[in-house]
Image (tube, rainbow, N blue to C red; front, side, top):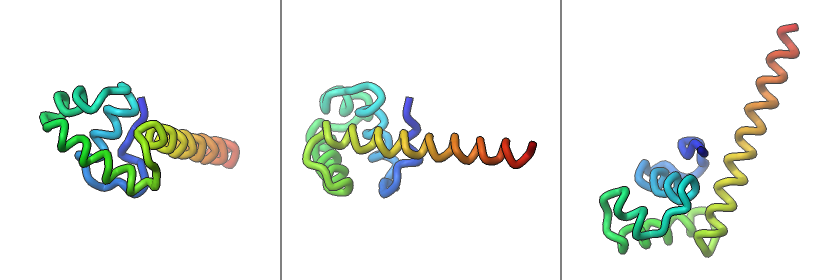
Length: 89
């Protein structure tokens, strides 16, 4: 599972929750709405705003961009851990 707290540029907790459900579960807008206790129209609006914020035009592009960002963040943490280990030896 991807930790969406580290996504740059997304500060609203509800947006992070929506992205988390979308990326981790591949849920439809209707499923996201049900899980978050929102109307489908609200989820659609949130997605439009999030896509605009990320500079993408579809949910598929959004998922790819978020996953790339999260993998990049994880890679940075691994490199930092290795550097810390090497300096401790």
